[in-house]
Length: 616
Ligand code: FES
Image 1: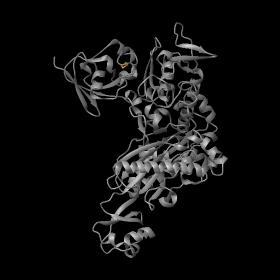
Image 2 (image 1 turned 135 degrees about the vertical axis):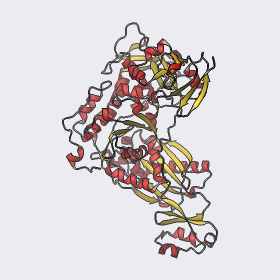
Image 3 (image 1 turned 45 degrees about the vertical axis):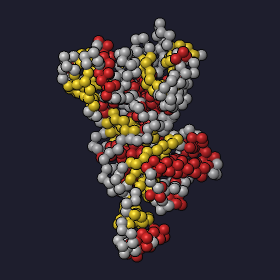
Image 4 (image 1 turned 180 degrees about the vertical axis):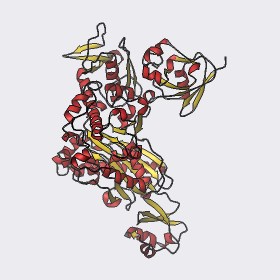
């Protein structure tokens, strides 16, 4: 019998499979990133594929049937390692989001929508006789440095000389063939990402990243704000460290693209409000105390030279507007990149970090909040928690019968600890296996040596000492479970309160955008099982990566996008969770796994009507 052809969509990768091979073999041969935690033994249930065509050509093992839910069946899902072709023809498969294997550990790029290229910085040809006087009469502002450039006969007489213009201001004169670039920065509390863009083609010429140097003054925003308040030089020190790293990244990106930093004429930087204020040198200490009001919410534009960024000295440094003390320009950039502000469908944007920024709504009304989810998702305050570095367990599957554990680690070697995505997998699988109850308490399992007492608390053995790098048992303790419950309750209660504010229900959500590094690596099935987001079909979940960086790039590439960002920041309503009387109840309801119930607080009056907040 001739072999069958398997096609993986949307990339269209195809391969022939013999009848002794399974669909996991086909995926591996095509280089398709498919979860295979148990290496094809059929125990982890992770290697799911959606059969788009050729269901009749496939034969499943009984293990596959036992591991799939009714929802899986209704989505035409099969386990790749337990399914083989049994006939001739073409089988078309798609990898569902929950089975997509993440490869890249340093998340810098994100979902980028198409954009019409019309940047704020543009080249304007200079005729032979062009002079500063003519340009001024045409309504252009010209600084002394640009005036010198233009007056220089060498430039004015050369064929192909051109002015670099920002809005109606001439920044410089240069040869028309020379590059005109922009740099977009996403200033995260943990990491900085930078993108060097060619503003004439729209192409991203280099992508660079570095840890945020301020980490030495505190892991989270509140610690850094405390540093600002605690020392008269605190703000200047944090700003200097930030600018130094940004200048390093600028140099590095220009080096990679073989472009002089002098050809960078526009720098856009987005970040949470604390990072935004520190970057601009605005008073930031008061952001740590109620009413957490930003010094400004407006778009700020400065000149690079006096500002301290080593682009062209006349380049414009552009900080898009923020929404509130804890809802920054990174959220505005993220919403802009996902286009949820243009859709009539109810959508939710969740950027998971130490402070999780959430926005829910439609083009008619968007409401946002920041929820203090803490660092547990990054492995902090977890006994064997760690960041997603080499040796971190990033994926886990627990057999519900035997409680045997399959896992995958980042890089090579022996496991050293558990990163956030693995913690969510573990808690979800232990809950489904009835090892954890809805309150998150460990339940005894007679005959199993996996559940044990560590001092006074119960713990689950993930990796025995013999297999672990540190030669000690890697366990998940009762306290660890509690930490993750607190973090997920912070996120979930934020989502529920935004829905209640909009007088909508989770069933109406058409799309959840999961942004940020953690949101990229988390298995959506596990996140839904523990109740991080509401019970919605998984095909409504989309990973969008670093959308803050994408929004910053959009602002570089198009004046219209910059304008849209300003309008978005004005119209997104802010829901201050800390002051909301519904928050304690919403949080308590979100603590159990997955969630106590759908909350519907007594006060469902839209916030805009309650306090006169602007309405779109
Ligand atoms: S790889 Fe298929 S079930 Fe684990």
